[in-house]
Image (cartoon, rainbow, N blue to C red):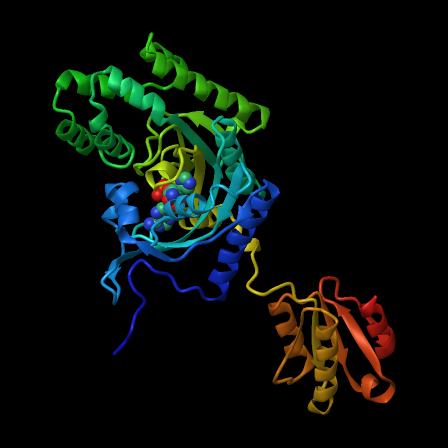
Amino acid sequence: MKIQAVKGTRDFYPEDMARRNFIIDGWKTASIRNGFAEFDGPIFEYLAMYQQKSGDEIASQLFAFEDRGERMLAIRPEITPTLARMVNQRINTLPRPIKWFSVPRLCRAERPQKGRLREFFQWNVDIIGVDDCLADAEVIFCAVDYLMAAGLGSDDIIVRISSRRLLASLLEYFGIEESQLDKVYAVLDKKAKVPAEAFEKMLEETISDADKREKVLKLMAAESLVELEEFAGNDEKAKLAVDELKRLFEYLNVMGITEFCKFDIGIVRGLAYYTGIVYEIYDKSQQLRAICGGGRYDNLLADFGGPKISATGMGMGDCVLGIVLEEKGIFSKVGVYGACEYFVAYADDSLRNDALNIVAKLRKAGKVTDFSYKGGGLGKQLKQASTVGAKECVLVGQEFAEKKQLIIKDMASGEQKAVSDADFFALIKR
Ligand code: HAM
């Protein structure tokens, strides 16, 4: 029987692993640079945790199973509920604000498509315990900071920002019941993702009143915060939400990333728990699904039995990001091998043990070192040295047998110099 990999999963051969590590190392470095501490949780949790608060879409994509104790469990489709659970457990002892990051491997039984798989890695950055939208600005900055460090600029990516609080207040102002809001959000989130007719049909099924529907469609066509202020009129809640967005844009301006950021009423977010500012990052070609999504979720900790503490954060997956990094040529610089410092080559088999001894000494001195098992001529071994990206080649030839002399070849310039074994190792140790 020929066994294949499961649909929507990936095998990571060394070249894929090098790319995955390039992404994940960059995420971790950016998190630390921005003052976040790493956490992780289990890869499965009680099924009910995701059914309760993640929303219908994620609930329908769960890999769920029953364990031998008849407990219903699910593989994590996201880590935000785990984060809320973990923070609640230690809420009285954790120093605030809580600034945590994580890079979980997640599973969602989605229909596999470009940029969306059934198993992926997702960088999460969250701040708990800060009401002010400065925390939202900091999370957005952290995401943009990473993307810039990876080599992307404002010509490549865009952060599209809106506010659930603003949308909620305007929808309520139009006469839509609070209890209907989650259903309406789920439809509005699909606006840019499905054809116009399909969207209008979904909207019709959710909002039966034609007048209200008309108002919602007009609102969704608004292009600027100024237009939104007109919609808000004298509605206090809507005005406060507009003010908050303005403050957020001021912070982003002070942080110097305005050119990456744009207000977009169409950003609603699929997950049910968001309460305030929401955003998604896209590649500028707009051909791909979101690179990143996040927002404020001020009720989740309380919903999970903890105190009412505000929270905000984002998740960035490795799939769409990988496609963008590939398209921009950034992956072409990522090598399969580590930074090989020395490749030890030997002229013939009689020198193999001497070479092996030098390899061991270099490795013990902390140097990334490689050599050929087969030997078989210096030309062949030098080729292997270039394949593994060695910086220098240590040639063990007859001079070594006769007077313990090594030839050191700089692989970039091709320059060679003779040096005694003792001098070479004295230099290495220094
Ligand atoms: P999300 O929008 O469901 O949010 O996912 C965030 C990002 O994860 C997406 O923009 C995408 O890059 C990636 N992603 C999601 N599903 C898939 C998939 N099937 N295949 C590949 N990549 C995927 C959340 O998960 C929130 N928990 C983020 C968050 C953290 N909000 C606050 N804190």
